[in-house]
Amino acid sequence: MNIVVCIKQVPDTTEIKIDPVKNTLIRQGVPSIMNPFDKNALETALQLKDTYGGKVVVISMGPGQAKAVIREAIAMGADEGYLVTDRAFGGSDTYATSYILSQAIEKLGPFDVILGGKQAIDGDTGQTAPSIAEHMGATRLTYVLDMKVEGDKVIARRQVEEGIEVIETKFPVLCTATKESNKPRYATVSRKLYSLRCDIPELTFADFPNIDTTKIGLKGSPTKVKATFTPKRTANGVTIEGNSPADVAVSLLDKLTEAKVL
Image 1 (tube, one colour):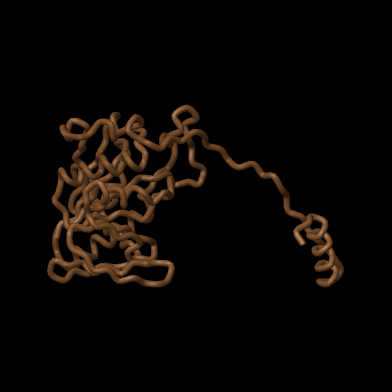
Image 2 (cartoon, helix red, strand yellow):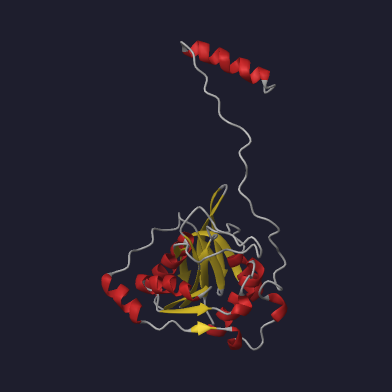
């Protein structure tokens, strides 16, 4: 079984820095980690490999520093890792990113299973992985808790609002994982040392001679960020005091009535 996992390096902070001119993420000087949901996707891949055999390949798109999360994935148990990077890809939105990743997957494949986290904690759109399936014409299953293979069939349990849904489909299939899917394993010391020696090949614009240039980078991104801002605080809390709970309740009702809430 050939499995590919799309992982992303994201800022390890709640204070996201944005370029005020380009409205794109500023990565310099911000500590970064592997997107937590992508770790769950990687663990799903490694569990499939443990059960059915095969190979796990990880792909990340970003600047050179993103190789750090690829090495982390290899330390956890992935077999190979590739970085998709080029100035021509800079500023890509979820549509352009998913298109570029789909091209990389097709170049490195074929793969039976494509995995990714349900969303990235920096953008929180949850669009990239499902869009990869759309570009590739593959079946997509989101919020997958676990998977098993029977012959040429994949049986997946996925989380929905009403409970658990069981779906049966065929390869190739793209699935997204959540934190409820599993608990990512820790890397062993030997695997960490091995990951430091691994070569991480880069895939650049030149490696995709047939890529549609109207679908990549800022120019190929149909969504644009017009402005970013921190919401201003427009109200303050009020402390209600009293000699007894009854007095506090009366004061609260008076204030709510005064504010025309009641």
